[in-house]
Image (cartoon, rainbow, N blue to C red; front, side, top):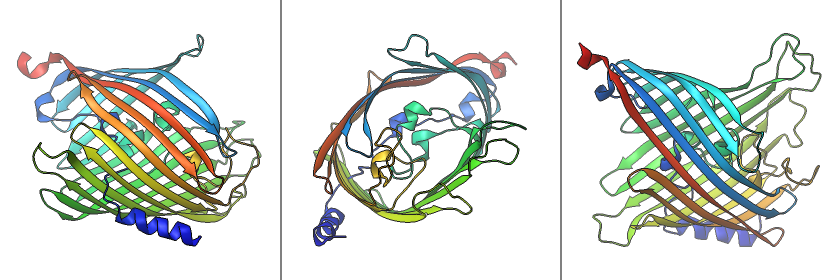
Length: 380
């Protein structure tokens, strides 16, 4: 790492800010379980409308545009205050593709009590995992919107935790393809908290596997592990008067390891430093700056920009052992008309190693609601 890079790291660590690991709460998925919903039959509606334009021209990833709509509708039943069963369909439509309508079944069983929850079936995935981008690509919210498997969550006063297995491709005897799954974990441990400040230690991990034993595919198996650990500090301003609503800094050391006997990875191990600082105004407009320095870093589910190997959208076979990036972001996140969650983002970055300036911008409209269809408790 150059002397200039080290000075930049020190500068970013001392900047007062609030999460470039952006506040994605309005885009999170949540299966609601509450006393007030006991013995009710509900219609659950989730609508996600997206537009994301990546103006990228480098060798790691070329630009692309994503635009379309997703709609999930489910019927749910809560036999008691701690259990929710639901089933329905998920539909995705990419604009500009008249034949590409995708329809998938979704089924979930969630058990929740005293801050502990278990979900079997369709998970609370994507943004709900609250992972950093070097480990988890936020575009999976669009490209891989459904995660299915098993999930265990903890939401207590000093510990927030999410552990899950996402079974992505199932194989059967004689399949001509490999099975694929990923296992993830994220824990936030609160060291100090009062009415304005909070200091936490986040630990994140994601293991991906592609292989299997009962298929006829002769491709070598591939298993990678990624992990991150760091600290976060957040300050929330008192009252509604100050222009500054909150600031937060998040700083991580990340690791990559190709797990044996994997033979497909170009790099066998790597690491990175990810530093973030942002402030949020009382108008829900946020400005942030982030710095990434990665060496020999690969992440099978991570955002492509952070990696040392060209993505499927990049120049085939291209490698860049050291990635040195500076991000600037402007974000607006707000619930409009007490109904539609609006998220607007402009995210330029500068590639210090290649003297390259690129950017993306995106707009998300989302809506989530439960409507009561029948109440067995009132019937009795």
